[in-house]
Amino acid sequence: MPATNHPNYFGLQAFLGQLDPIGTGVALVLLGMSLIAWYLIFAKAWRIWQARRRRDGIIVRFWDAPNLKEAAQFLRDHRAAEPAARLAFGAIQAAEHRQQHRSRAERLGDQTSLSDLVVRTLRQTLVRENLRLESGLSVLASIGAVAPFVGLFGTVWGVYHALLGIGTGGIATLDKVAGPVGEALIMTAAGLAVAIPAVLAYNAFTRANRVIVAELDGFAHDLHTWLTSGTRLDGQAAPAVPLKPALKGVPA
Image (cartoon, rainbow, N blue to C red; front, side, top):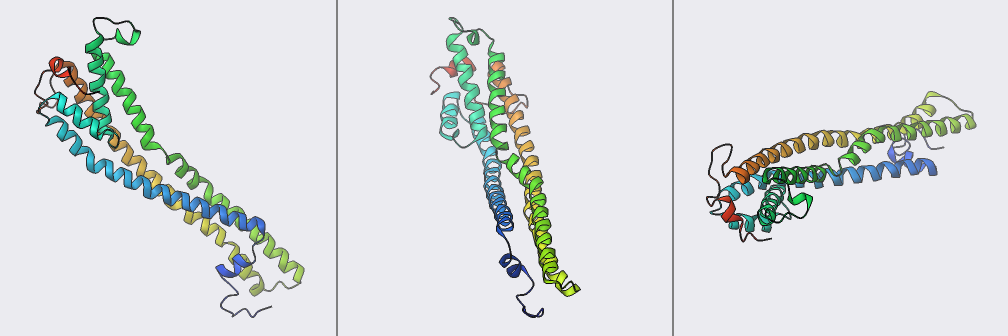
């Protein structure tokens, strides 16, 4: 048996070297959780930063458009990546559809009023955007909740094997017990190291998503008021062309 003052006798390298298949499996599970968590953290942080950076520009450029046709064209060009653009374009398309079918409503969906149709479209779009923003958060929450217990299981298993080896060797001095048991606690530390960033990121992303959805909801109220009455709630400038003539020729 190597001397206890050898630099590799205690520590992570020695612990990994004595892992059995179950212990190795626990370590790999924690590693996989950590990789998934950090991938989601970086990916969602980038998407939220992009959404918040571009959102105000999309809304300002929409209201600054000289007419609804140009506004709709601008929204169509940006709707693939921008929630605000998808929200406004969907509402404009719904209003245009209502204008085109109001005199020959053959479907139940065409018999509703313009206000109800726009509200329904905006609500459905907001629900889809909220689901898109929340994608991946359940995985982060699960990793934050499960990782400490996975690490604890690895610690219990490591302590069991450490004590079993000490008992088999017939030597139970403190220096023989402290090393293997202390190394087994590495699993608990690893579980916490995986869980803490996941929990913090989950809380931060949840708050950021609430802010984005609230701002989209305010934009949706402005869109509804303007599409149904031709005015904005805040009294600021809007595309100057009246609603009904402007809807003609809006690009699909």
